[in-house]
Structures are given as C-alpha cells and as structure tokens.
Length: 382
Ligand SMILES: C[S@@+](CC[C@H](N)C(=O)[O-])C[C@H]1O[C@@H](n2cnc3c(N)ncnc32)[C@H](O)[C@@H]1O
Image (cartoon, rainbow, N blue to C red):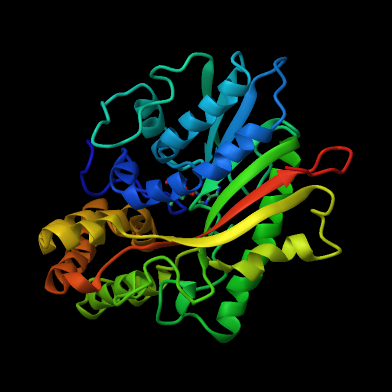
C-alpha cells in the first residue's frame, strides 16, 4: 500500500496513527507544534552534561513515524555538536508495539523519497548519529535507568493507558460530565504520575525532558475547539449519523471512545507541587506555558478561498489520528466493509467542511513543559 491510500486491512487492538507515512504527510500542524518546542530543545542541548565516553541519547516518546521531530532534532544535535564536536548521538524512537515502524525506517533511509516540506532523515548527512526504535508503551520504563540525556514527547501523552469506560452519546471525554468525567480524570492523573516516574528514572542526572501535551487551556480551549465547529463534536455527529443510517450497530456506535484526556495546567503541575510526590528530588518542572498553533489549512484558506482545498488538508489531518479509534469499533466487520464505512465517515466530514469552510479549523492547544532530572547533589540550576 502506498502513501495516501485509504484503509489498512489490519486492525490493531489499540488505536495507532494512520500507517505508511500517512501521518507525517498530513500533520503539518503537529510538526509546527514540535517547531514551537525548539527553544526548549536548544536550551536543553546547551545545558545537559556531555560525557564523551558513551553516546548521548535523545529519546522521542510516542514518535509515530518519526518524521515530525526531524528538523528540531537536527537543530538539537547541531547545538550539542557546537558544544562538543565529537559527541556521538543515539536517537531512540519509541512508540506502542503496534506503531508502523517500517514507515519510520523507510523515512530514515529515504525510501520513498519524502520531499514536500517533510524533514530530511537524520541519517542523510549527519555523521555519528545512530538510530534505534523501542516498541513498548511509555507507561513502562522503556530504557535503562540514567541512560537518556534529552527526553522528548509531542502530542502523545494525552493517550491514556486504558479507556476507563464508554462515554454516553460521545466519543471523547471533552464532552463528559459527572462521574464519567471523574473516571477519565482519575485515570489521567494516575497515568501522568506513572509517565513522569518512568521518565525520571530513565534520565541521566542533569538531563532534560521536553513535553508538548494537548491540554485544556485557561480559556477552556482544546485541540479543534477554538472557533466555530468543534472537531471532536463534528466527528461524533458524523459517527452518529452513520448509526442513524443503519451502518453501525448499537455496540459499534458505543465502542468508539478515544482513550484520551486533555489535562489542565493545574492537573499537569500537581505532581510537582505535592509534598508527598515521588518526583520530589527527582524531576523539576523548570517551565510551563500554554500556546495555540493555528491550523495551517485554515490559514491557507484565508488566501486561496478554495473550500475543497481546505477539506483536502483538514480532513486527512483529522483522519491521521482518529481513524484508528473507529477501525477498532468496527473490528468485527470484514475489512472491506470496515473500509467503506470509515471512508464514508470522512467523506461526510469533508462535505461539512466544503459546505461551511469558515467554520472548520484544527488549531492545536498545547501545554509546553521543560523538566529536568535533578543532579545527584540536589541542585537544579539552568
Ligand atoms: C498524535 S501522535 C504524535 C506523533 C509525533 N510525536 C508528533 O508529534 O507528530 C501520538 C503518538 O503517541 C503514541 N502513543 C499513544 N499511546 C502510547 C503509549 N502508551 N506508549 C507509547 N506511545 C503511545 C501513538 O501510537 C502515536 O504514535
């Protein structure tokens, strides 16, 4: 199957990004989020300890097909090399076992050639850069203790370790209330503690962790909910329209639930402020802020005013991260029928965009975090 084709025959047990390089090809917005982390990556590269006796490890947690962090990592390696010309760098791409690692390695070896504004492979022209991949959940320690000098994660740690429960009438916790919301909140809190504890163990003393997490900002905004149409509500409405038209069973309709939660800044900061936190003396939150990366497709629409062109950018971008949830909900159907239904879902979404182009956009709302593993003497100066 080549780039840009529609639906894979394989259905994994957990949602993944759309395979075969589709994800990076259609997520200019997620790449812009990573560009926004560049100052933090460069700050980390300017301060981390460099030991020439062993490779310096940069780990990307929830890397998908790896391409989106390419340019920012290239700049980070440049900064490290400016400090110490001979440093050997090992980049570790980590994601769930079900992730499409062949797309990652094809990009690294430039097959097929990427181009089209996608970052160049780190292996294209950088000497003494080595790449490995780890197929394991970031809810476990995935690398040896004190082995990672710069940890990195973008747009990934809102994925929970499990789906607490189905959400009545909706696909996402953003619309949940009462005890349903509380279950997602509790899961997200436990998961955040787990994630941070493992990353703290993996970092070398003085190492940095840079995280860009989808969040709910101080104005209640979150990804796809900054203007008129709300992306998650639109997906939900279209999914339920398929149910009303008899394409889904009751069970399939209810099974589409994103195992996700967008934390508030207060929820993100809690483990660092609690006296009893296991992170005390381990990991320090150096800085935290929220920011919106504006939808590149909606911005381009302001210039070209072509609704079909807007839909051609926006709908595949939404599809790249959402399709997996619907595929799993349809897992008992034959692959061809599953493909037809999922194609229909995004065809209907596309029609909505074309009908009211000014209403549709995919802005990314993130919390940007710089964390540091404390030095063994307890100091944490930057
Ligand atoms: C939206 S993509 C982000 C990819 C890339 N970091 C970027 O910013 O473009 C989220 C990634 O997180 C991964 N992910 C979700 N849950 C995970 C887990 N428990 N362990 C490791 N990776 C996970 C997904 O498989 C997916 O590749």
